[in-house]
Image 1 (tube, one colour):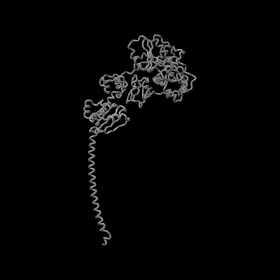
Image 2: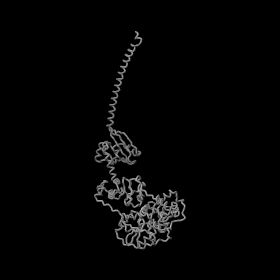
Image 3: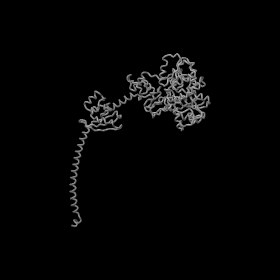
Image 4: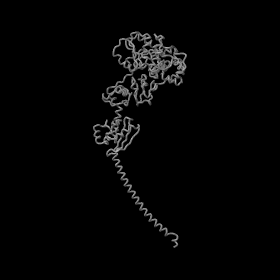
Length: 570
């Protein structure tokens, strides 16, 4: 089920925009019936789709209830707080510890302590490494990208787990294997780490989830009581720099990285992917270490930081936590070795015939038809064709195909309608029209239509001289329909005007009702004549009936008088 994965889609809120497809670095989005869903087996949980979704259809799985249950069952649960807290939460150490203890945590510790152990382990490894390029594993998104999508570099990842997992092991070593550990930070991908290694990390929640939980518990950071005890077991030093670009490199140098080892930072998945493409084109004869960060500017701009704090303020907040007086870790006491072996799925091969068939489904039969417009979310039409063959995309995602389809349907309807139809813009220039419209406009217009089907660009009021009527429709409401009956030469026209796009385009349906009206007049005249004759006939019948009644009355009176009682005696 999609909701079991850290990122999922509320389908009814998905709006057919394909923005998530466009920004996803690995196209781990499947579109079905116009709704975009996350393909968990391909996803890196980088949060790119979550960031850009305009309708907020992409959601991050909430693990608050899972943590509540853990706290209810285990009284020995510690919070591992990512070092970016100092830049994005807007509170001090003792307030943060006080709030988390009020939620039920036994203690609060900085993930930065695990980062310092990682720096020491990295320095030892790189100081003995053979010439070549090596990548950090601190960012799970970048590490997973290499493993699944650039497996040729899997052996170049420094073989240690992330600071979060290292810190979790460190806390269990200090407080017992029964101790629960919950990571709190800006990263969605940490949920994947917790899902994969529950023996170290019980759960991972984001800063956004923490804010929701504090709100639910009526804990206000501005008025929350401060804890007398700060972070356990101690405060961090250079590990606090990890959320910043180059922060890991500064920590590595303090941990004893030898001179002569070249270091660099690559932040942002787009730049990271480009860097991987460039590596291997030229030989590298020395040790080069690359700090990789999937988020541009580092973890202080992670997908679930909340976004309320400016980059400068976040940067200064993290720098403030770096205590230079605390000595760096030179030798790792705790480390988690990880084998980053390739686990990439084999890529499906599609023949040129397969690709051509998929392109034909969206009306692309030649190279000229391949616009590579990126409207569907894929940078080339051929990549879109592969997505169609994979079942990850559908033809309706192609903007040019849908536009052509709509035009074909509209033109077919226009051709079949017996009435005259014209669509025109605010400049009263025709966008499309049909042959009945041209015939109604007159012989010259009909001849012009034969030369220029549709009459595109022609001025409508020069073909039918009703400029005022055509202009007025653009001042109408969206659903208003205006009906007019107007004389045009020897003709009588019924005109229906309506808005298509307010202020931009309008439509006209026109019918020549001259013959119809003439027939109506003839019928009316004949009906009047028939009615007149009927009235005369009725009057004649009534007159004759009146005479008969009078004669009958006289006879009846005579008979009555003849049979009266006095007449009988006589």
